[in-house]
Length: 78
Image 1 (cartoon, one colour):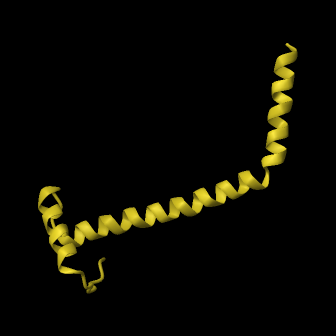
Image 2: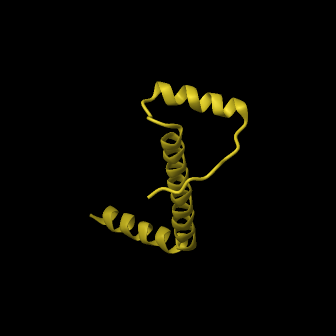
């Protein structure tokens, strides 16, 4: 079920969206905007996930570096 809402856009943006709509097979402006918002939200979610992962790596960097050095030292002994 969809909920109807209203948004205000600059005329240039609306014109660009309308041109894009016709050229890319979307059936309506609502469909195009829904897709754009889904992609935006997925991108933001990914940024949050990536930032969390980077924080974990940085928090454990010293221990991970030591483990890597240990593995390399072991491989050199062969």
